[in-house]
Amino acid sequence: MHPFRFAVQTQNAADLAAWRKRARDAEAMGYSTLLMPDHFTEQWGPIVGLTAAAEATERLKVGALVFDNDFRHPMELAKEMATLDLLYDGRVEFGLGAGWMKTDYDQSGIPMDEPGVRVDRMAEAITVFKGLFSGEPFSFKGEHYTLTEAVGLPRPAMQPHPPICIGGGSKRVLSIAAREADIVGFNASLRAGYVGPEVAATAVPEKFDDRVRWVREAAGDRFDSLELQCHTSFAMVVPNRQEIADGMAGMFGVDPAVALQIPIVLVGTIDEICETLLERRERWGFTYWIVNGDAMEAFAPVVERLAGT
Image (spheres, rainbow, N blue to C red):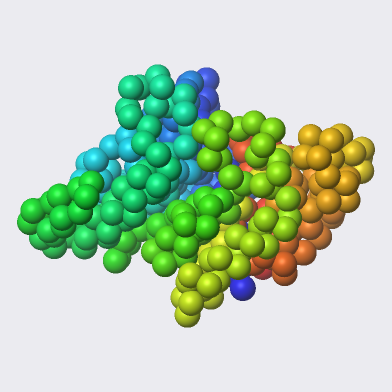
C-alpha cells in the first residue's frame, strides 16, 4: 500500500497575505498538497489561487479538486496547468471531473447535459490532455472535441504528465479513473446536482466496498500503482466521539457505530482518528486523505504522526 499523505482543501482568504500564510502553514504542518474547488461561488479563481500558493511555498503541491471539464476547453486548461507545473518544479496535481453542481450551470448558462454526456466529454478530454501534455503535435477527432496538429506547449515538468486525479461515486466514472488516472478519488454520489439528504444513503461503508471493487476490476494490473484518495467532509478532533456519532447517526440514517465507519467522517481524539485511518487503509486502501481548511490546524497532529508511514 502507498504511504499516507494528506491535503487541505481551501477556497479563499481575507487577502493575499493570509492566503500565503495558509499555504506556508499547510506546508509546515506536513500536508502534501493544497487543493481548491472549482465552482462559481464565493471561492477565488483556482488557477490564480493555486499559483499564489505555489509561489509562497517550496514543496507544497497544488491542484484543483477538481476542475469542471465543462468550464474550459482542454487546450486552454492544459496550457495553464503545464505552465504552472513547469514554473513550480512539477508540483501540480491535475484533478478533472465531469461537473456536478447544478447551480454552477444555472448561474452561468452553460448547458448541463445529462450525466452520461458529461462523462463522455470528460473521457474524451482525458485523452486530449494526455496528448497535449506530451508537447508533440496531437490530432484528435471525437464527438465533443476535434484537434488538428495541436501542440501543447509548454511541456509540464512532470512527464509524461502531472499526476491525474479523477474521482466519483458512480461505477462508470470510477472505472474511467481506474484505467486513466494516477489518483482515484472516492466520493458519495452527487448525481442529484447538490448535497442533500439522499447523499447519506450512498456514503455508508458498504457502498465504498463496492466502489473499491469496481476500481480494482477496471484497473486490472495497474491497481497497485493507483493512489486511493478520500475527501472527508467531517473531520473533527474532539474528545466526545460517541456523542458526535450519535448525532450523525440520525443524519445518515444509520446506527451510531456505522456512522463512525463512514469514510467521509473522521471524528475523535488524535489517537482514535489515527486508528481509524489505519483501519480504513486496511479495508479500502485509502491513503491520500483530504480535510477542509477549517480543520487544518486541529488535524495537523494526525498528519505529523501518519504522513509517510
